[in-house]
Amino acid sequence: MIIRVGRNTGLVFRAKNNYVGKYVSDYFYLLKDIKLSDIERKEIQHLLFKKRKGLTTKYLSKGDIINSIKEISISI
Image (cartoon, rainbow, N blue to C red; front, side, top):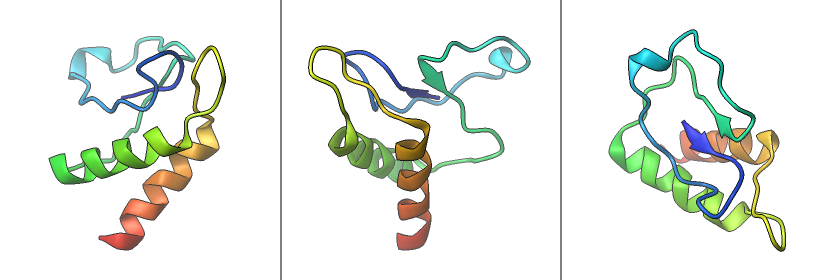
């Protein structure tokens, strides 16, 4: 789960299975069927921090997230 909006934009967390099938806000982005190691999670988080946009409220677009995932998978 990736936080897309707010001061913690770009943080990446491992979601528990009890979120499966439940509504998720637009403030979060869920990666389904992708298992990341701790190193990969930290690398993606680092890339996302660099891509944050916004002056008063920080945010990430879906494209920013997808491109960061592609960059990590290319470098691994």
